[in-house]
Image (cartoon, rainbow, N blue to C red; front, side, top):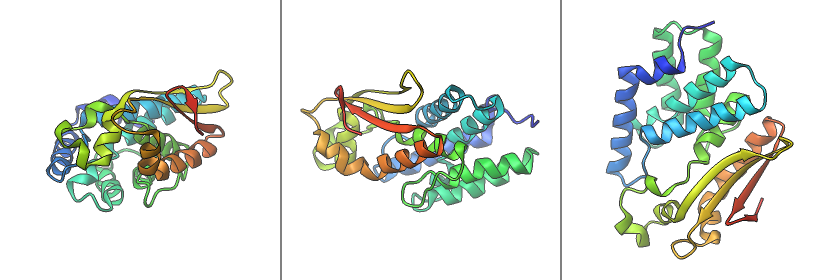
Length: 221
């Protein structure tokens, strides 16, 4: 068992520096927030999913670590950030003497989280995908004054509440959103997030469950 824990990763000053500067780089090109708030939420959701499905505590923690580190590649460039982030994570975790098998699992999850190149190659990657893509919230928008010109910001800003939970029988994993349709329509949400929702559906299948989407109390998927 590795002594590289989620707590240790969160307290690591190098990783904190990469997260901070990756978010600053995205801010400079007008992207939504990708700071500690986003990576912690992604990590916690990934942990929750695997925990609820009965995976081992260590697998849950590996998903949590991958979720926390998944966006560090943005410090290099937004393009192919999943791949550069996986390579960075390999170097960091190798220097911490994490076992190779665990490193493989984490870098696979990080390298497969971006919807343009991703595939849920294992249960940990699947949990990280859903943890990342389900983080839709108003507080991720940096410039509310520019909503009219940025549909991504508009969709996030319209989201008043987002929840991820399982159906009572654990057969479905549900992303439940409350959206202010005066800011953004449900159709606009689909236009922007369809690729991400399809990826979440594939990820849920790897976990043996159905992915459901509920917006304003209406089941859409």
